[in-house]
Image (cartoon, rainbow, N blue to C red; front, top):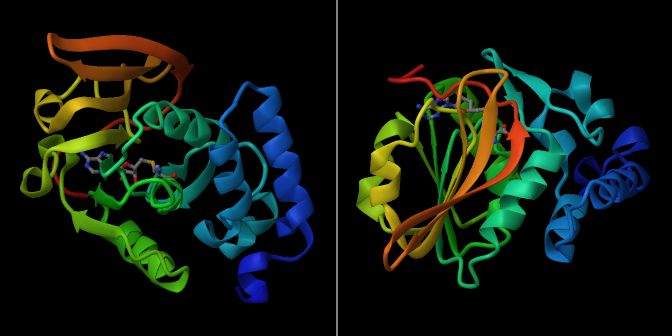
Length: 219
Ligand code: SAH
C-alpha cells in the first residue's frame, strides 16, 4: 500500500491500535473483526479535514446530512453477521462513505450495497476502486425494495433505521441468514439481529443505537 493509505500522524498505526483497544474494552470479542478494523484505512472514507479524527470511536459527518457509523457499531454489526459461518452473499442498505461495506468485503464472497444519495455512492465507488476491493457491487436506489435480482442473501445489514422491519428484506434472507437492523424513531432505536429459521424468524436485541432514519425514494 502507498503511504497515503498507511496514514501519517493521527492516522498512523498507533491511533488504529488505540481504537482497537477501546473496542475490545467495550466488549467486541471477534479477533477477525478487530483485525479488519485495524487494517482498514478509515481516514480514506472521510474528508481530509476530518482525517485526524478518523480513528476516534465516533460517528463523523460525510455530507448530505449523513454520517459514517461509529466504529463500535460497525464492529458490533459485523460480529453479529459472523454468527453465520458461510457468508457467501451479503446485502448492505446505506453505503454512505463505504466504510462498513469495505469491512464486509473482507468476510463475504460478494457484497451488494444500495445507496439513495448518488453523490455519496460515486465517492464510495472511487474508494473501493482505489483500495482494490473487487467483490463489491453497488446500486443507486431505494433500499426499501432490497435487491431482488441477487437474492437470497446470507446476511443483510442495514445502516439506516426504519420504523418497522421491511417485509421485503425478510423475504430476501436465505435460510439460516441474519438481518442486522436498527429499528425505531430517533432516540429510541434498538439494534436487532433477526435469524431466519425453519420455523420462521427469531429476533434478539443487540444494543440501543442511534442511526439516521431510513428514507423512502431516491435522494
Ligand atoms: N455505513 C454507512 C452509514 C451511512 S449513514 C457509513 O458508515 O458511511 C446511512 C446511509 O443510509 C446514508 O448514506 C443514507 O443516504 C442511506 N439511506 C437512507 N435511507 C436509504 C434507503 N431507503 N435506501 C438506501 N440508502 C438509504
